[in-house]
Image (cartoon, rainbow over all chains, first blue to last red; front, top):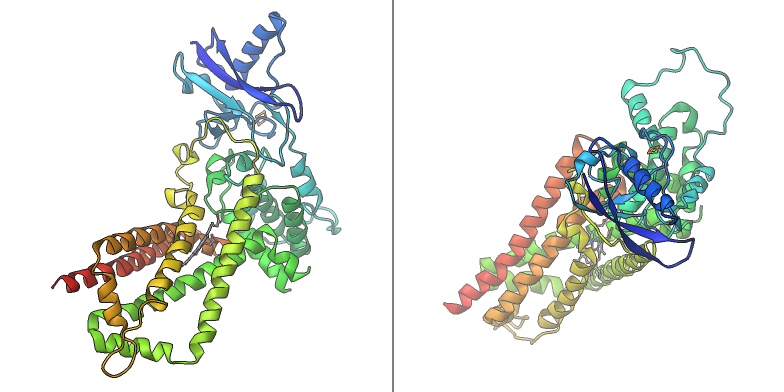
Amino acid sequence: MTVKLRVWRQTGPGQPGRMVDYVAHNVHPDMSFLEMLDVVNEDLIRKGEDPIAFDSDCREGICGSCGLVIDGIPHGPDKGATTCQVHMRRFTNSETITIEPFRARAFPVLKDLVVDRTAFDRIIAAGGYVSVNVGGAPDANSLPIAKDVADQAMDSAQCIGCGACVAACKNAAAHLFTSAKITHLGLLPQGEAERSRRVIRMVAQMDGEGFGSCSNEGECEAVCPKEIPISNIARMNRDFLRALIR
Amino acid sequence: MIPQKALSSSIGSKFLIALTGLSLVLFLVAHLAGNLLFIAGPDAFNHYSHSLISNPLVYGAEAGLLALFVLHIVKTVWMFAANRTARPERYAVRKWARKKNPSSRKTVASTTMILTGSITLLFVITHLVTFKFGPYYETAEGIRDLYRLQLAVFSDPTYVGFYLFCMAVIFFHLWHGISSAAQSFGIDSPHWTPRIIWTARLVTALLAAGFGLLPVFTFALSVN
Ligand code: HEM
Ligand code: FES
């Protein structure tokens, strides 16, 4: 199949960018979306042009490196999938596909489709850890944790920090990411001790990075490749308000 | 943490917006209940309104309402501006994510909150000028005849239309607003959240229908 691409090109941070049209020939329907871009890039390199920069690593949906806005939706058309898990069979022959980077003030574009997501690292550094000494791994049954609590912590821990939640939010808010971290740490006994301090510090860092506020629309949940629900955000709100009156 | 700083954080701001918004909703419920006395006739309506405006406590209540309103507006407008700067560069193509995953709660209502809120503000000003600071009619007993004022105002079909439009706008604001406030407070559970959303929408529909009924009813009376 053949697809037409409209791709955001930008030479470097702070530089003006624009949409550039390309045609991708010889695209196999079973190619992944990123493989299709690889093929386009090989073509560009052969012609002596600058290849399209985009992030990827594992290409199996677990590392959180990839992230493109495909036809106006972060990570493209598939529910619960990352960009690297999208296949070309989801598109029709000679269709035009628009590809843009995740857009947020806190995620400045470095080049083309690559954005700087270190703001997430700084949110984690502000409190997304357990610093109390909890000793060695305890005997399995010495620290009872209810199954549903363990499941919920595990579900939240699935967050791969890709930033699609920010990209989808009309306010470029990072509430889903931050709340997923707060939930997965705060629900377990090891993380409980620092629960109040954690939420206050992480929220302060999140606000300071220039992310927006939450309008409770849930677009983040809808694009999250790990389908992390906004009930995490409600929990973060609860934890935050609780921490204030303590 | 200093509470003042906490209340200007993204979560604290939404807490205040939700608190003031829901308080205004409670006011709307009380306001509607009182207004429905219009249907009971001039005596019931005028005695009720007289007991309100002759009570010295009403000044405190009015000041409280004004404070709620001002806080809600200051916080939402400020937050709206901050949210715009959080995404300086727009997307060339933008689609709602509910197309790929229906879990999203995004609606026309949720995307137009600042617009419906602003129209509500204009409406409230017009509403106060028309009624509270409107013509002063007196009944034979010597109390303010608001029944007559309401009859006069809604004998004009254009005014009835304008009111119905404004009630539709408030309907949109609260369609998203009431359940959103629950989420801002952190009230959520797999069992309750769907029920909260539908109850909130039901309350919204009842409020809008109740407030919409009065101008129509009054117009019908004035025609007879
Ligand atoms: C009778 C008057 C009003 C009532 C009952 C009301 C009620 C509410 C409620 C319950 C919320 C939800 C809070 C939350 O999401 O946590 C809300 C949100 C909002 N209100 Fe109002 N409101 C009123 C007037 C206004 C006015 C005059 C404005 C602005 C000029 C306004 C602007 C907004 C905005 C922008 C939001 C959305 C905040 C967000 O994006 O999360 N409202 N309102
Ligand atoms: S490349 Fe690792 S998640 Fe897509």
